[in-house]
Image 1 (cartoon, rainbow, N blue to C red):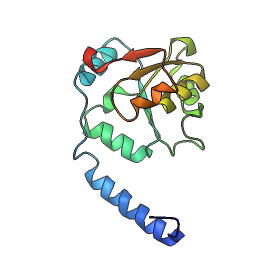
Image 2: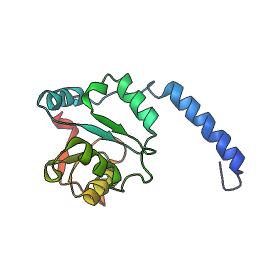
Image 3: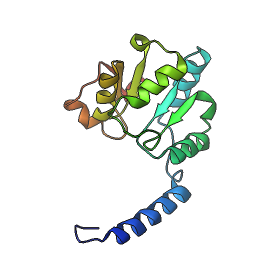
Amino acid sequence: MGPDASEAEVQRALEFFLAYYRDHMLDNTCLYPGVREALDGLLEGGTKMAVLTNKPVRFSRAIIDGLGLSSHFFQVYGGNSFEQKKPDPVGIEALLAESGAVRDRTIMVGDSGVDVRTARNARVLACGVSYGFQPESFVDDPPIFWWMKWLS
């Protein structure tokens, strides 16, 4: 919108975007090959899984529900679930407390350096996927583990 946009114009544009996104967020959203099978296997094995994203929580929950994955996750937190967003560790700290998970047996799987920094800030392991939002950002923030697209 540019530096000269008024606060009212920015607010109107944001409202337009959010309404449009709400109606179209699943139009081109799908799981990468092998992801459903991996999530099914983890769930069947008793792994507690959650989603922590910077996307607004209502959209995140709607997307997960629309993909038929709601039963896979015990919790979904978005960027507006806490006062701070990733890479602040508050979301992981809340999930650890809710799940009773052991910190040194917890892995944050993500597609960006922000996810790796979040894991580091929470003192949990980081697994990076080689596809998704910003895998190129792993150059500056490399994860400990990798899940390459060709493995799925």
